[in-house]
Length: 546
Ligand code: 9MR
Ligand code: ZN
Image (tube, rainbow, N blue to C red):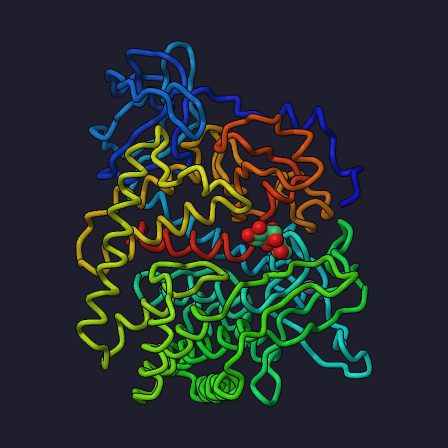
């Protein structure tokens, strides 16, 4: 990226003005509420907006937190359950303002879901729905095949993946899977109103928004069921508005991961959109077509960036989890035993049952299998146990972290906030399976970290919280010249292997994992945004809004 966007001094100066760290969106009255102080103190006060002390307590000394190196004290103010807006004070320091109220999670849920609308491609973002963040339609020209420039095709639509303007099938399917599964599990998501062009058409907005990406996935499918891996320019665009990015768009070769993921998501969506016969039938047809391609092409076809192209690779080492997931969705769609047999065969090859990422997708298959009418009781029990024991492990990790995050050192890589959010999802799924709220406190702790209870004291969601990310690596957020970032974007978060030139300058060697972060536009390995970092947040906040 062009170095002129990076001002080292300005970036280094961006640190929290607050010394005490809270969830800056807030807490429900019945939530367990803990603030974290990375300095020694015995007592703390909670003050209301008039500055009156409404609650006081003793802190607890947690000790040194391994991922940040902070000697941590915690303040438990769970007993305060009166609606209002507050700060925490201790030892001359204060926290960002936060709210206590039944609906504190609703605005967060809306804004992180609406973020997908702001990432729409191939269409204009209009004044009515995007306000100051409106822009003209983008990337509408026909693309050509990378391997044969004489073939052009229409791949208009979908969501921009991230801070860049690329569109990638496996990434898009992962985001869809988080959101569609959340929709199936948390009934109140049906009522979420996003103020998008389709609002009020009788279809839940969350399905209106997901359809945008699904229609694009369908365009990436070939008539033989093969699915192109990605549609991007040859090189990432400079920091210009999307409508000004006129470079040639290419469609890259088919990967078996993209095919399997497409079969899976289309089979899942065909059931969810069954109220729309025409769309549901198109999805069903697409699912059969891509599954048929998988049967004819049993070998793994991965993806590597061709020479000269620098957009995202999204390579994978194998496609077993993808094929496993596709088989389950086909079984759930049709009830045909042959798909069940396929699924069992992939299972024997080794699938991580709790993986919820863009590469390892076994957990998505498990979620559908557990809802499937024709499931085998014994296999289902094994699947349930996998999630429950994973939640147990993660709960222990959370207890051992001064900030309550379920992350170990290894989790602090590029996009660490996705690990955090997937763990939040795991707690929610364990509760869903057991029909209890046993892990909701742990799920909430992951949300607390995301929104300010972390060693940077920052809310990693643009637009949420008094001290929040505001300089994400997101092209339109920089090119639009508006000081306030497009809201609702989840930053990638700390990365102990700073992987871009600016981050390498800003993060001194030896910095502990939770502190390897800078809110700067140049730092794409720390502070980029993507659809599949927002989507697990939609899932987590969908659960917390229940
Ligand atoms: O999220 C991806 C992360 O896990 C990888 O380590 C990283 C480097 O390959 O790429 C990330 O994905 C980026 C993608 O390649 C292009 N669009 C932006 C994505 C987020 O940074
Ligand atoms: Zn676009």
